[in-house]
Image 1 (cartoon, rainbow, N blue to C red):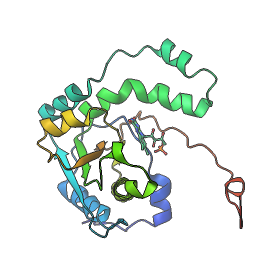
Image 2: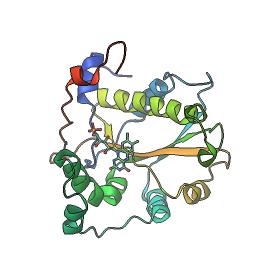
Image 3: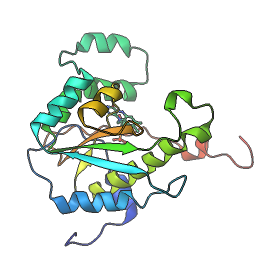
Length: 211
Ligand SMILES: Cc1cc2nc3c(=O)[nH]c(=O)nc-3n(C[C@H](O)[C@H](O)[C@H](O)COP(=O)(O)O)c2cc1C
């Protein structure tokens, strides 16, 4: 549905960043539909792609989410400074920016997407990595979704809810399914904070034949 040149994969990979500050601008349905189509092309452990997307458009469902998660507005920056003292500064910078925005990003994003997946077994019963293949698969789907949106200048933030049962209940999600992430998406605001990614020396992280 794009009427302009498709971007190179390498450009899109560099462009995708987590954004928590959104413009008050609607996203066309075509962009979201295209991103969901691309999400469903991701690898999947059992070939079934047991994923669903719930699209929230209005304030009322966003308030239901915030209520379920009991997200607190009042964040004490000094307290955060104390908690993250001694931690890598790049990580501290991320949390100090991100934590106070958790409620605002849900309220201000023009769309919030709940990504649902079918678990093999309940997460708390998982004993082996293999049991979590369903979760690994849905995250490959989420990555395709985010990359596809970035191609259209739309960005998101993968919020991980704590009170999944309450969200399932409020949004009528079938009991046998689980929520992977809640993703507020939108165009970035002019003053959107884009955090630097940690520089990784690939040669230190690449091992030949053995560690
Ligand atoms: C599994 C996972 C959980 C995350 N949880 C949250 C979250 O609850 N709230 C939030 O604001 N960001 C969350 N993030 C976004 C990360 O903070 C972000 O991806 C990271 O800082 C790297 O920044 P980048 O995406 O711009 O490269 C999460 C990301 C992942 C992959």
